[in-house]
Image 1 (tube, rainbow, N blue to C red):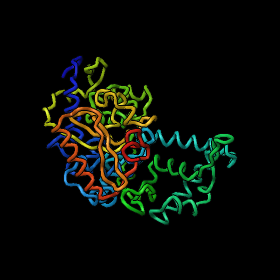
Image 2: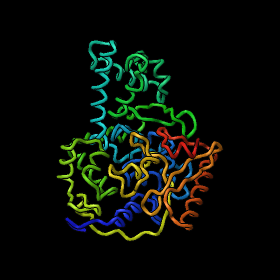
Image 3: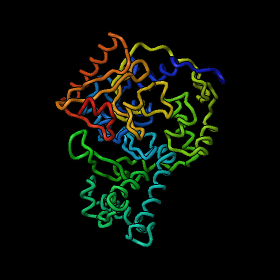
Image 4: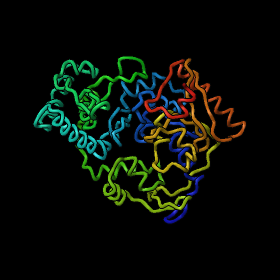
Length: 396
């Protein structure tokens, strides 16, 4: 593969299979290894971390994921790219913070400062937000891991309400979620173990400096250099890809994306559909072919959500497998392309729907994976935050 050469669909799919730990013989060694290869695992749905890791680490137990998240802390939950919650590989936290999270925090803090003034809570929005942040941090310093509900009862500022819309469409919401968003994106707090089961959606909050000292004690990186490093990590996992793909995945501006790529050491290539793309200039070697494979990936899995331009692996299935806002539901993969989706019955049993003809042998593999996942879930029903049309059909 050299500058200007077309990259075949087979090459892209083989890279995906190996680098995303989905091909036979390419499993990740552990949860941290899976997250490190992909920068992070999506965690907007808490269960997705477990299911994304299950698909990539052979013999994984729930306790293994708990240990990585809450004991060894080789991955840390963090608000980052596209204002999304990720379980980020710990050693990449400083890069992600400077390259993406700081910008998210800046925007969210500015928006909240504006909204509390509009709501009549104060005439000085920036001061109000700063004081609310400081009061929440002080409470967590004293209490340790604490639920949002408990924080609201202890910090008066968090009891404030914001009103959105007019008339019948008006909504009143608590400010606590907005404040915790700012604190999370700015790297001051993180999500500790929830008070309930592994799939519980209500986190307990804890100070990042207490939870992950190495995440806060390292020197802060400058944003331009961090964006270059993040671009290189991303291209190692997701390249070759278009500039648009990188811009979308990171949430950067066009200018930020161009600047990062200009210093990342990339070369131009053509994709099989004629679109221009880039690949790292030290990543030209063709990938060894992989054995046939299938995988059941959860909603918002980092592979399904890895590119803005998805036709090369999604085909015509976007309407059934994504919600209107671009959130992926549970998917079935075969040899580097999406061929269906899965859901669960009321008893927790995994059920599948194939949208392509993949042959008898592959169907048997899919059924085997569905049985293996049902056993691993043990009757627990996992419901995505963003249900898709096919998931509703299968799980209704």
